[in-house]
Image (cartoon, rainbow, N blue to C red; front, side, top):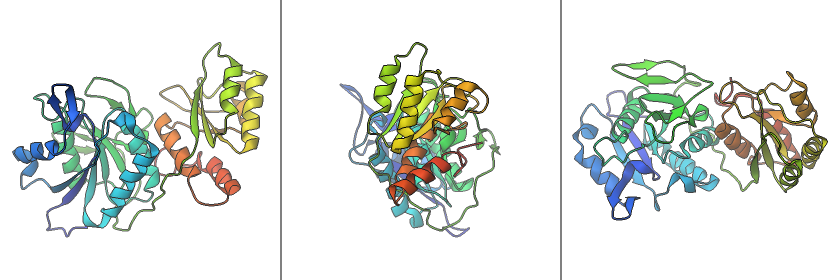
Length: 343
């Protein structure tokens, strides 16, 4: 960490996304070196009151729709490789899957002691009305002068806990929300701290859990669903399965579905019950429809976002150890808050 008198230094991992795109004849596209050139030309990013920053541009730059667990692992490894050199980290990322990446980083880098802030924009930084200007400027400032020892997602003057965020608007500047957790802070005239950090700042290296190649699927139930189709999906060679259920975690009381879920549990698939509702969470003891799922071996996602549920499950299944032990621990820890993802 820097000494109190030293100017803070933030590492920017530029993975791609709208914020750094340039206008071309074929529309907006990533362009090597363009973002660095743009930031050098903006005086406010280089004021003495701002932290220093080092921009690392990924090759190739990615549309966030192309992000995969391997890319999440690469970003986490990049942060870890530079961890001792910098006071904090900003990850520039496309908005479409930004919440997945923020969630994944929180689980792969347990016991963070420095801030990691994921941000981006809806309009390229090169455009006059870009929200990327305020998002990046504030992310750098907050990482340096209001650091929290966790992964955050900054958008529209608000810092959200990374594993509590979901994209809720395709085109608006308020693209992200945190339905079951208050924001960490608001950046208005003053920086207003709202939700306390989950840990104290420290300089120790965080634990790092790279992701392995695991088959994790999401199955969304709907009224009138062909349970033969559901049975077919559940019978595939999966490591983990998330069932998107109704209300507080309820599903149709059809034996085809229930037997398929019970069989998946016996095969060692970690099956998680996640509600389709934005607010609130799963309570499998409240109704018969949820109780039946508990009897089939399903574990509860509580009030986690889908993004957090998927990335947490993938991370737990990637832990080292004997298969039976990994499965048993994954089922237990899905219902335990590891880094603020559960109420």
